[in-house]
Image (cartoon, rainbow, N blue to C red):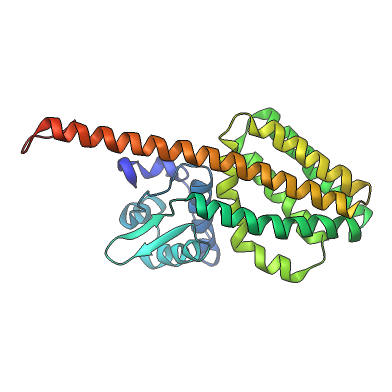
Length: 257
């Protein structure tokens, strides 16, 4: 992993024990996926198989099965002679992803408002309250989990199996972008207010209003994520330029800083 980052900074504590072989691969996937979504593994970081196998006490075949799942979710790439690397998110990839998200989630909000039972709406309200609690506590991990629960309930109540089939792989990448957009300190309170508006429309059984509110929420999230990505790209370019200038000053045969 880039910068020789110790595995224990990325994964769970060393005394974590995987007990059930049947769940081993899934648990490895969850650890890696969480590390990526929380930004502990960043775009361009290499995943060193030997280091991860030692840290988790697992075999290389088990790790590679988990890595193939993350590759299918487009969270990592696996290239010959280079191994697995965390996907480096581009502005185009973000725009493409948010365009699809706007279509699917806008539709899901519309159909949820139209079809959901009172019990479904009550469950959705509980997830909204959980989001506010996590935001108040400042727990980023719990916040992302609460956002996933919000969308799980929303998708479950929209009664469209095709939408639910299309979203699983997309949701992981959405969470990656969501973690990026949350990096903007002004974004979180605005995001919560937007979710409140989505729920208010759903509670009133206003499908068109819910769809419009959901799409507005996604447009604003896209804008925030693209701004964070732009700043990250500028910082990377500045760092690479500084390294190049330092190497030039060092001269041939002399190590740079």
